[in-house]
Length: 522
Image (cartoon, rainbow, N blue to C red; front, side, top):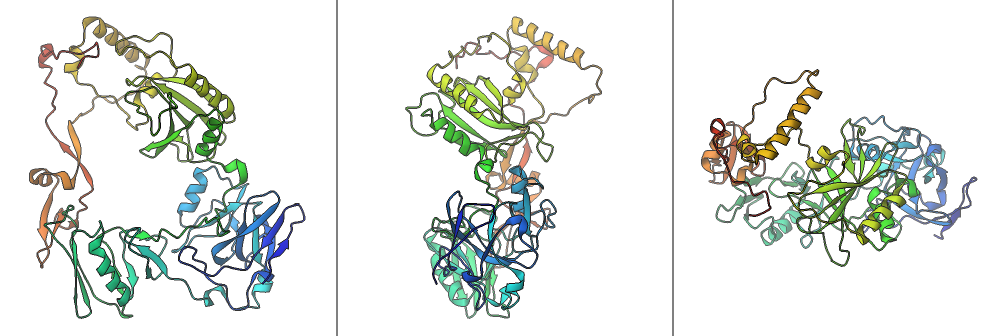
């Protein structure tokens, strides 16, 4: 059928409406019921969608000619206020994290056990089939659902399986036919994930065994898998399934886009900074840790790859919000800037010393980029490790802790008393000043500090496993696995804190001394 051109009363944009594409391995479009097609589509703003309307597509960005981006599966709209999520779904959490508010966004359909909420900007153009028109056709669920596609890796798959729920995880099982199960068992030993596994069929029963000679993760037992009442096999739990790499929700040929994207206002900080710095010929690299994200800029822009932060000058840039929606301070570049955000730029000299370059409100990105450009062309002198830097640095303590979530600073008494007398005198004077400044506040009488290390179960010795009540066991067929507290199947990747002797000697009433290398010698 030919394409159609639709318009909105309050817009000069032209919306090109196309027929729904057929499903492929890369674009998993579920067909509409018999008789439904794009000749029935109407274009409205998201806040004009009514209960019972069928949402079929969104559109490419404007202005001008805007092409159809079909949703993978059309759905019946049940609009509600954004923020009233019944399932605390990932889509709502992401939208909140990106600064979505109830006055700017709407929910077109609430989450269930299969899909998240559909969140979109209230003025987003949406292609719908109006409820009174849709009532003349069979319900949406009369169109056969498409099977899910999963893979062992980029080279082995896809394997068709029944659709999975929204809470499904990569180590959960998928339900496949006998033919598909046989193909999986043929491919599995050829993959990295299945290098320690062997597969055997005993009539209609599948045995997946873990070879202890090849296994690198001692806690993964084998599986005995029998067909269910429908003759299907639920396979999983021994390796992480990958959703088929070809399933792209934002392909270039006009399929489903992210409906929460709102032109320039919702451009992430990373994208905005990358563009602003590119105008100065500067490249930034993203890094992350403990839920935080930031960008790193090398002073030497002629070097390729991620900057060497342990040896060369660099700058770190991120959005900072002292109190985000969850009450915790936020360091990020993965959402759009919002009210209360500030750009923070720190510069490091490659020896472990960092200082603040600028702190600017979120709407002053051009000035922030200009400050970085000035730093790149005129780098600060690298201080000697023992040098006392002149001037006052804002938030020096927070900067010292870096991007960690540490709430306390622990230093061995032996090392403190080993420093030169002049240094000890300055240090004690500052401690006394700190005690005096906050003596009016209630504080804990004591803290119990325990030396030790974090260690994954797979790296523990037998004695270390015993100390956290983990032991080895085996199934009836001899397959070994790990068990904790005599009942809990233990993941070998989980980390536990193991107490160990402090490698720093006891202070011995002030007598112990360790030679410090205050001049930077090793």
